[in-house]
Length: 263
Ligand code: PEP
Ligand code: MN
Image (cartoon, rainbow, N blue to C red; front, side, top):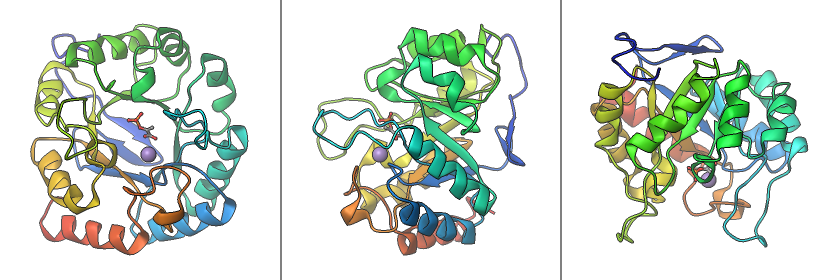
């Protein structure tokens, strides 16, 4: 069902008046984790100035260590919803448990399924049973084919609005947090009609190369980018090293506009 052979034209997913797929690239921005009302309000105001309509932020955080910040849970969903409503944005937030999918419908406009859960088949089935767009991230050790099968789990249950996300894979290279598989973008676009976006934050883990990587992703046909933005990255409760602050994000957006990658 996700194959180009089944559907020749690009799937376009409309969220909050923004069209993902087959046209202008979109920017999804926001902090790694939802932390406080003030943090969300500051970031919301900053992103609104750049015309951002899609706000991300994790309430359920799949952390490597059980001793790290695990997210605010439902309270975090409430906070991101309130911020998004205040600034006229849609909410994209990760859900990690199949039993939370139904509850999340009151808070999110797009359900994110994270890299660590790309093959959590019960979660995929539950996401397939609802009628909300799903942002499906490639597993860190998943092949392109496995990503497409994971998407198939969702679409085959009747939820046709799936956005694929390349977020870097595990390799021996240590210079970046993950290795961005730039080839995955045109391959996914060829094999599937679903929109494809690139997470430039988690793939690189390095702010110093995010701008050229963003241009590369858009040049190979990505339908959008995910960028983590935090009002004060150094004190962030997760991913403190890799999030842009608001002035950095402003410069980033200006750079993409000046080089013609964004309107
Ligand atoms: C995220 O986007 O918040 C995240 C945890 O990313 P990933 O699942 O790609 O590691
Ligand atoms: Mn993060």
